[in-house]
Image (cartoon, rainbow, N blue to C red; front, side, top):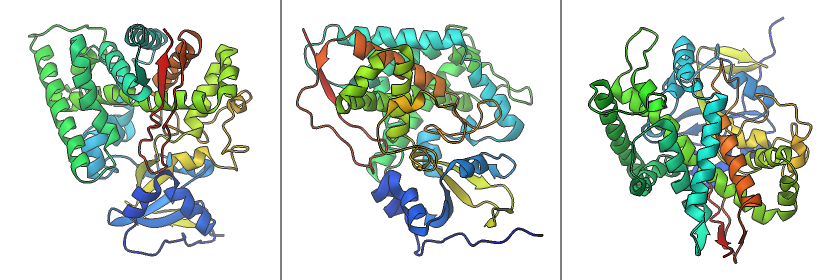
Length: 412
């Protein structure tokens, strides 16, 4: 017997991009609730878009036999956030081969180096500070230094702020329209040109860099056909390490905002290494970061009676899934202890995307994110004496990414 057909609930109207910008992280779940469906249809950037929210829907979304990522993201996102030709836009064996290049740097020793660098850079920045510190701004400088040192990109200490001011628009302004979007695109062009120049110099042996680092290895990486990657593609992939590490500054800001908003839970985090981990995982679940992941339908198929047509843009609601009451008890409460007994799934807790690390599209930098957040929280809870001055912190749910603006003052 054939599967019963269901019509995907469809939002009327010519286009809803402006509503997406207005509603931000609530856009998909608002419609899912309105139509009482985890699968809904709308129109974004002038084309039909299917939106999904939930665990089973995430499993569907990361089924590589049904969806592809290559050039799935709108061009404005590729030209700002992701870059053209990078790993996020590949599929199949080509994707697995390229992702292995990244995963080679997710070893225990490499991750320990990231943690050590993060602690050293925080100590360097804070030890002589007597002023109020805006956590987000400080985190950008700290994590830019961490990212450049860890990847082996040569720089002078006084150049870190310039690197940070070029890297941050790639994720801060990628969803904007108008001048900010143009600034994001221009920043990417400048950075890609700079790194492409380094790659060419490495290959012609006119500069020497640390041969254990990603910049060197990416420069000499060969694709599945045994050919060196185009220098421009290498630049895109190096930025796919630098940009996400600097973007962790958003999570660092939210982590200190959580300490400010939930002091009793911060006390919980101080009690053990495991509790620190629970706290940062709850920050990643509770606060918004990525709004959605994007793919396209590979070929016509039917799922639970819903028809998916070839090449249809499809969005998975990451924030909505992380607040799904069918998955999480009291999802709108900040409760780190919920992770005490959490067994983990690649499809229910998806702040940076879902799926498996090895065969799927789950973010290769998720481990780095967790390690940097944990060592930063540990440092601020146990090694630094500070107070929260009167705050004007907070964010709106249409801020993408959300910056709380939380500040601290170091006790002398």
